[in-house]
Length: 284
Image 1 (spheres, rainbow, N blue to C red):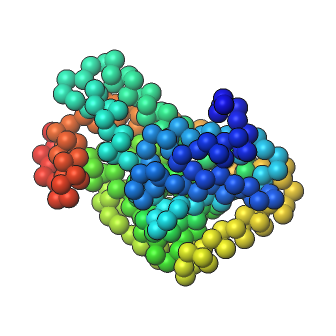
Image 2 (cartoon, rainbow, N blue to C red; image 1 turned 120 degrees about the vertical axis):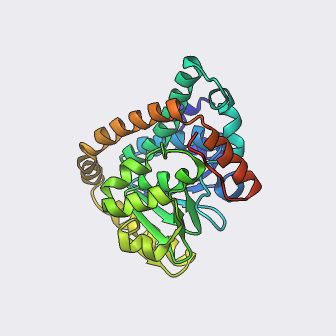
């Protein structure tokens, strides 16, 4: 099967990182992992743009609900699976060739998340449990974000000696007040659903996961009940200028990380993560 041109029905039976279904005019995209807590590994980054490209092309689909399976939305980038792919550039003495390839790799991940933002069908993210790092990048590309009371968030990349490079720093600058975004991005601290609602990251918090999913489907149904071309036009106008501004920032951070990500601090952060201990950083 040529997945680049696959229909929703063809994709649905072949995806590893997602469950994809359509009921009348509403599609549901469910993160499956296969990493722990729906971590974002190789399959995720390959399949995300395929899924949203297919949904964008199907007239029947008028709105999309994006959710996680199991207890959590997503624990973010699957470091154990992805880091070995980048060993050449992250090792000592990386030269221009590997750094150029790494820039392209970052841009590939960015484009996967951007496929959610530019999908003509509005996307409602339903967040339960943990939503960390890449999970926040992903929901920042959605049109509407809802959460259950047990949701927990973190823009955690800085704690791993990484500049968040897949979209959250740029997209959330249009969602959160600057002071809130800077605090969360610079500390990498965890915050709960109540704070997420107060600062505007999510529109509403629902008491439990069942109520969250019912509410997300309800918002999607309200959207789908409107004339579809007007809905798509409204989203495109709201995106006007924003995606160009975001694209500029994404190019900058891809170049920055390709140049500066390899560091002693990154190696220490990875070891500390694996050993479950605080890192000891020297700025080298």
